Length: 109
Image: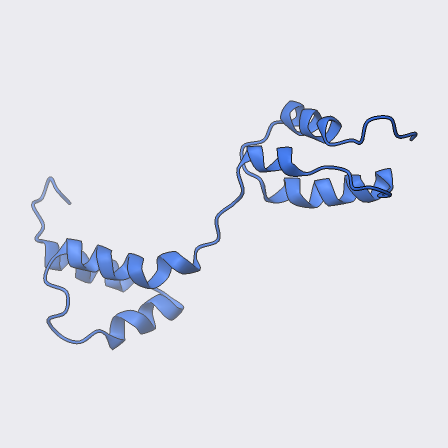
């Protein structure tokens, strides 16, 4: 759009046609003249929807998962795997390292 020098308000209108569900309802409730440029549109949109965004935990969040006192090995594995599913960018080697690091030392299998 930069190549064709399309004005900001046209870009905002184009973006509005791609909105669905709650975002479309939000846009329709905006009063006329509220959005005067692309920065306004971006700011209002982020203010409305950014708080609802669910962020995936980082790989380092797995370092905080430890086997609890009196927790069975299978229960720990299940809990670790449930957390590992939501983590993005974790390789198998990283998952294995954090899984082993979270085991209680001196516990029999």
